[in-house]
Image 1: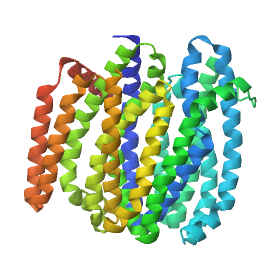
Image 2 (image 1 turned 120 degrees about the horizontal axis):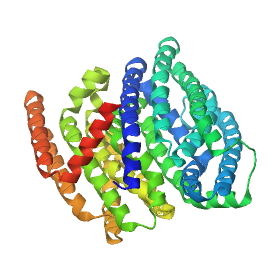
Image 3 (image 1 turned 90 degrees about the horizontal axis):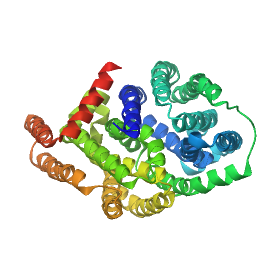
Image 4 (image 1 turned 120 degrees about the vertical axis):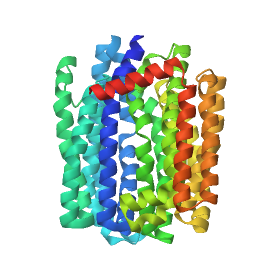
Length: 489
């Protein structure tokens, strides 16, 4: 096995285990918040987190991703540049996080009252200002660990943080409700920073690094030149998503935003596989820039296995989403069944986007990511209000599904044409996805109740049988190795 494949398998072993644990704990957290807060409060909390989803990347300016790339490159043969990159990145993010969180704090009441007409949101944003600042610092340290390919440490940090955060969240929601959920987040990220630093200190000692407040001009230009398209993507794409959710909350109801949140929880649960692979893959792709053939084979095989692994889950859960929601979240959320079904279908496309995004980042084609995000945001803003007016929260899901399909087809064709992907490795999983997701849709339109549940189970078993039959020897070796690695952990 080549050195890069060994790194990917080893990294995938640790991160894969961590992702299973953290996604499970995160899903339990989502269930707990949904049941304890109710749909409306959950909707308000979702708006708060989506605001943070804009502010945090905006403050970071794409610097952590750039640091991962250049630390991975310089760590091989240029210690001096690596040290300058580390110090520059730390200093820039420390300043940006402080200034950004202060502005966020003082803008909170205006945003809450004049835009969302929810005064409680202003209080939540004030509390959340500390979370904003500390999260930026956590991301800085994590990006450095990823650049040094300390995947085992990242996995342990992820598991410990998730395990610690869950009881804190439960305690504060029980005693303080919605405000308690935000306080728990601030306390959780403080603990996360301390844990992350504890694991990073030995790495700093090994690499002879220090938290110096130095800004190197050349390193700053290098970091910002790489990260500027990523920053522009954040400025364009994240506000578009927030616009859609905000429109839904203001003109429909925050309850429907809560419905989207529980659907998104199941969506995120299905995405742990691409998330686990992306962490060790990014620095490896950065090292493989000159070996196009090997890189294409690796990316194509990963996409193939992602589709084969995720498809049975989505085909099985989609038709019975109403019953799944009732069991997990309670009767208040059964109205989220259609948006959940739609988001599960979106998840399959998102898994491919995730891996292809890592490919573009690792090969320095961040301008391509920017162009895709501009197209994504434009379609989202143009279509969201119209479809939300027609179909409510389900319109938002339909828009996400349509945009994913419209963007992914030319995206894949471009990468296949440029030999970044081997089409022969992914064509069968793509055909299976189209066939079985179409069968799912027919089931939902024609059957109800027990008949629907039994039919969904039968079609899922049939799909698994087909997938087993088409697995190649390489697929089987990779899957067996992954399962053994997880069990051995």
